[in-house]
Image (cartoon, rainbow, N blue to C red):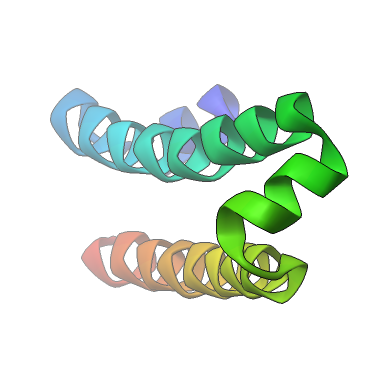
Length: 80
């Protein structure tokens, strides 16, 4: 990743901004999933009402991640 950023000549500020956004999204997905896994499937189902909500949140998170990564790629490509 760092080689790609260096080859594209992305400034440190832009890299840090996008890296921070990615880290926050990653943590926003993994921390709740880890918490739910720690409670067990039965506990997670009772905490959320149904397991479908957890799956929907996971799918939406993947979609949002993909949209943001495509946007970042286009944004970096258009500045060159």
